[in-house]
Image 1 (cartoon, rainbow, N blue to C red):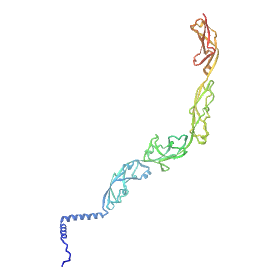
Image 2: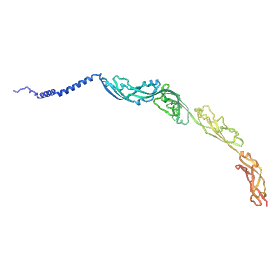
Image 3: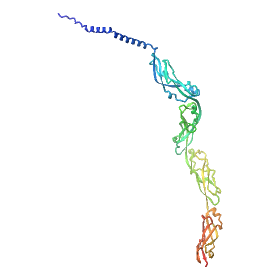
Image 4: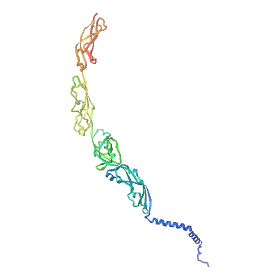
Length: 437
């Protein structure tokens, strides 16, 4: 009969493990290392669980801020240096408790410069201060201070001026432009503000359009010294009624314009002296630009004057300035006066002298006899010269030099003494001369 009881498992493997473990725990080196590791683990656990213990934490390149600017200005001072450019950040070492180590950040400490440390004008040293140290004390900070320059903070009221650039659209005139406000307040360091003489805005007339005959433009402002140089500083504040501004409103108004001819004949009055005449009237411009409302402009066809240039008894050209007639409704485009030149010329005069003697000249003069000893003479030339002539000023002659005895037809030479420019005409240009033996 077979036995149905299962076979007993072997205990050899368990025995080997038991023997190996027994040898291990009986090994002194193992026991020493095990005890040391266990002690370290227990110590670490105890340390970690004690939140009152402190550790050092380093914050590199912690950002810095500045406070107290408005308070310093209210005291009448301003820092002229840019502190955040001098010290943009700091390196901090902080003694932090273990319980708050992970929560401690640079922003909690908030390293900054308080301008309440400023004592007065000149160089001041500002130390880095911290808003809170509840998570631990700051052991060191690098850099820990900064040297800055401090000036008086002053305020000035300066006028606003408009500089015109570009050109107004054709057919239109910029009747007016005005700024709102007419002056602004500039505040900042005394050395800078004291040199500012005006606020300038530039109005580009090319931007104006007839679609908006009146307009309001916001133009950027520029601070200038008296010599026109630009003033730039981030320490300056420009305000209008205590509101900081960077622009000025400029109100503009356009009106139509056209060229109107000038009536030259109206600009001269009187009559030149006897023997003279008005040859021409020359004006500095043949037309002038006139700007007005469309209704008035359409009624204007010519520009005249109420005070013409008087040429009474003039004997030479005259020049002068004549005031233009100011028409109602005309804008300032119309000039106050215009240059006028009256060209005065001397007239020509022809005079007749009757029976002027004819002289005989030459080596045969004593033997010569003229068939006609006198003739009528007409002299033409400038009025003053001809008017002053007498018969004695006329020289009529025939030349018988080298002629043989007999009858000759000779030309009569005629001239005016010392006035060769005058024209002389004779009734008879030839005369019969008889030369005796």
